[in-house]
Image 1 (cartoon, rainbow, N blue to C red):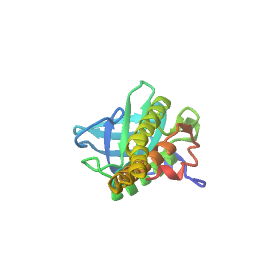
Image 2 (image 1 turned 30 degrees about the vertical axis):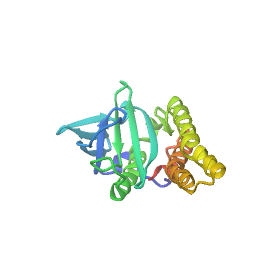
Image 3 (image 1 turned 180 degrees about the vertical axis):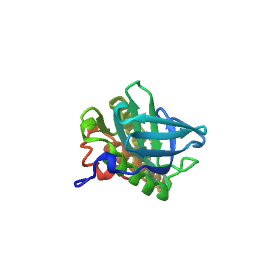
Image 4 (image 1 turned 135 degrees about the vertical axis):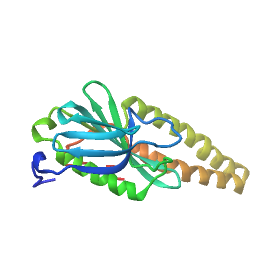
Amino acid sequence: MTGTPPAAEIPAAEYKLFVREGTPRFYLKNNDEGVYLSPKGIGWFIAGRSFTRDWRDIAAINLVVGHVPKQGPSGICKITFRDKSAISVLTASKWGHSDEERNIEYGRFLTDLHRSIPADIRSLIRFGIGFGKGQHVLLLVVLSVAFLCFVALPAGLAVYFRDLQALLVAGGGFAFIYPLYRMAARGAPAAYDPDRVPPDYYP
């Protein structure tokens, strides 16, 4: 991101991405769309209302990329403010599916977001990637158990009983678990330089 113009020279821009307050949890669909950047800060729409926060209000930015089985990658940019409130900007479609067009729009948003934050404020913000430490450990444990149950055990039974059906179950389990394992491996918590956003976090 060398040669980036000062924040005051970057024009305001809006991005057609869904926004959720706090950390996204289970939901049936996304309803609130629209996030925008300006030289003064970030804004978004919730339930038809517009909200804005100054760049100095941001305490942390965290990036996560997940994998929707049989669909593709999906990204989340969580922005936490100094009053502990937060918003999450999503690449997912209205129904939570991976969406190639929104992934591209999200990539534009990530690039512009990091370019827009004034240089003197960046040092006040924590830039992180991946899940929280506890979430990451729990995810690895769950995937390890799933691997034993749906891959290792059926494969062992297939060899012992020479059962082709058990081998197919093991293959199906591996095909389902492997993308999730890759997601977990990339989801280890770490810090990043806002001038060099890790390419893996552009879904």
